[in-house]
Image (cartoon, rainbow over all chains, first blue to last red; front, side, top):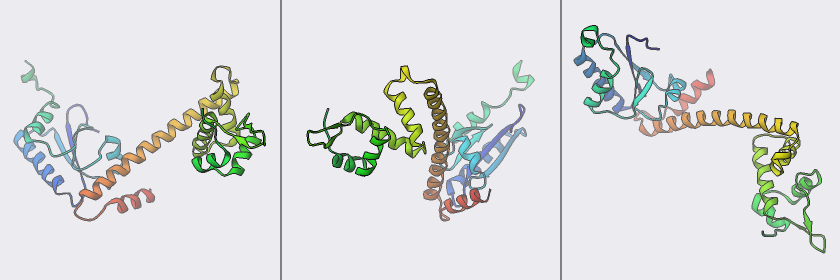
Length: 97
Length: 134
């Protein structure tokens, strides 16, 4: 489970799902752009973690979960993805002042 | 309120005539009226009770439990304490059953969607095999 200082993004996919691969690459690209080391990215094979996927409300692929919450149930637009990630980020002291 | 013969009820609810007579004998059905020639006549309320019995049986309630629950159904305000307690227990069982069913439905929905979206065959079989291993 993510702690308060990190963001965990999980891409729920299944082998053979083209959209899942694209979603993963899309998230990776946004993370590269944000260059935030506190963000962890994990690809989850639904068949391996079926109970976890069902618990989170995943009903189809790809599913994008941010900090334990299902945020996207299909491939999001890059801007929507960026906004969703940024909304989870904790402002630094400099940003707060 | 309509009247029905035993054959009508059998066809409608898929219960045999013997079963209907047995339910009457053990008190699950009460006050079934008769024609002058002694033929049983059922009404809509009896059908409602029979549907309740069928639903309760699907939940594996015993006939004794169902008989008590029917008392509660007939007159909830004056039901005996034991019958009220039984109703509470059965309600809790149903809630648990519903939760299990919901999880199962969600899991199967996901697997079916994976199956239609995957280009490498259907992962349903693999998913089921893995869950059976655990």
